[in-house]
Length: 237
Image (cartoon, rainbow, N blue to C red; front, side, top):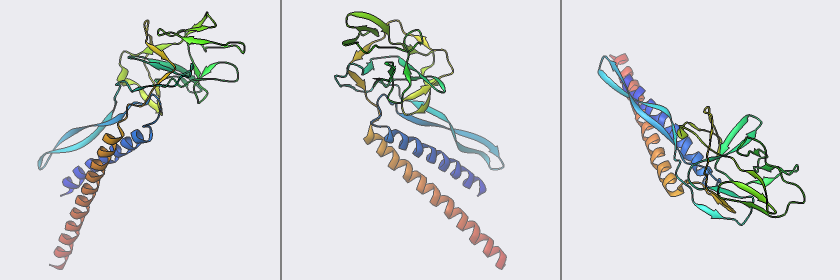
């Protein structure tokens, strides 16, 4: 009976982890460039006095890297990557990567994220503009032209194992791998890549997972009640 409880608790723990991840997806359904995350589980087999018992093991998570819908904004500082690649930004914690191209200019005239992180060019340096700059054009390969003169090139990077990227917060990612600069990126100016979260699917998954969590909790409670009844019966005898 103890084995049944441990198996149920492993399943309940996995369900709780999945609920947290689904809730995070739903919360970021409108976050530019965000990618859906899902928990990964597998059976963990252990031999015991009853034979082999299968426990549920949470061993990581996986991002859905499929392209999100592109939405036109008309803002020349909004950029969307079509296909592979990530923008590189400099944060207080080091270099991070994102698909969110809703950029702005900070007080120093540098291209930055809405959180104030500097957007980096293909050489890893900040991209700077001057007060008198007027027309900003970003070509598909990332080259930035200001009033007809080439200024810089937005850095777009890829990784050997894209799935190894880890979420830091929102659409911001980190990697232990060295980034590879893409030679022929595809950037759309005046557009943003939206989150690829499908709210209806996520809500359905949330309901099903919560139901599984509740049923498992009831199962554990029932086992404890049976144990308590058995102990009381034995005590009377």
